[in-house]
Image 1 (cartoon, rainbow, N blue to C red):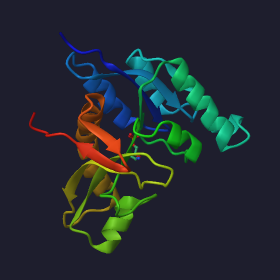
Image 2 (cartoon, rainbow, N blue to C red; image 1 turned 180 degrees about the vertical axis):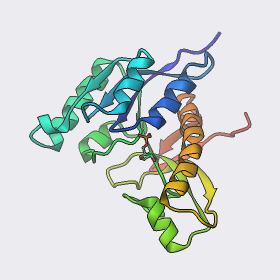
Image 3 (cartoon, rainbow, N blue to C red; image 1 turned 60 degrees about the vertical axis):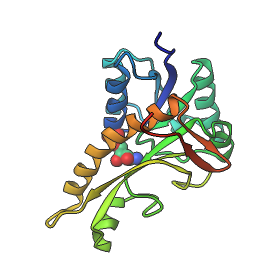
Length: 208
Ligand code: GRF
């Protein structure tokens, strides 16, 4: 018998290509998660269309409608709980979350970041990798903790930097890797094969 799919929410702010990769992965009957809710904080963002196209409920929770980070995060938390969400995936979600929120969802909150963390937390990662002359760049999926881009890594994918790369070319190559890596990491977490314990990620054998 196929196990019940975990109910996940995806939080996005813009283009939503990583949201799309998760929506696409979740369609497979044997994939252990289903996107049950999409939350977008920017009205008109492409991520909203992607959710609607996939027939997934989408809520626009605009940070500008809230007096500060805490009431904004409380609104997100309430929407997640109302929808019985079990795991939350940040996918290009461009708001810092409060420590109270990240602690409440610790071990159940994932983020994708376009660098090989701990290199280049924050913004403009592709430009910084090029400026540093790195030969490898890449992407990271990690559990979210109160510190920005600092939680324990679940999976990483290195991407070679090629002669003649500019920011756009490198970003496009990393994005292709992101679209494979996020569904793979979510699968591990949804199956209980990757989990956060004492501030570290524990992963059971990838072969089993
Ligand atoms: C991705 O590069 C992701 O790693 C970063 O923001 C970008 C979002 O792209 N956090 P998209 O909205 O998923 O297309």
